[in-house]
Length: 69
Image 1: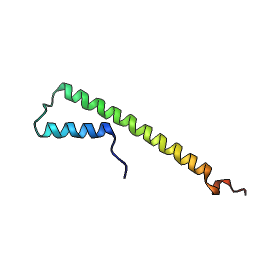
Image 2: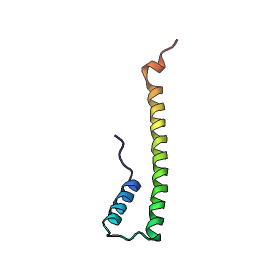
Image 3: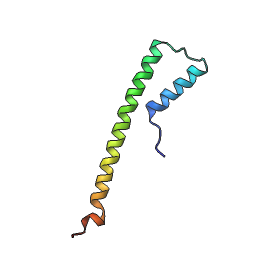
Image 4: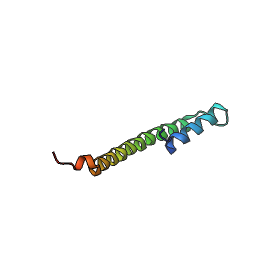
């Protein structure tokens, strides 16, 4: 199971505080939430890229890929 990114976790915590009326849902909070969402998308894209590169490296090192036909 993939772990949650820090921006996603922060967004979830902020939303919980809004739900409990500990924070007001104002323009500043909405701007922060939007920025956290954007940052989360970037982090997820980087994670996907890193996973793809790792898979490529593993495939290149695999004994099956070194066999000659």
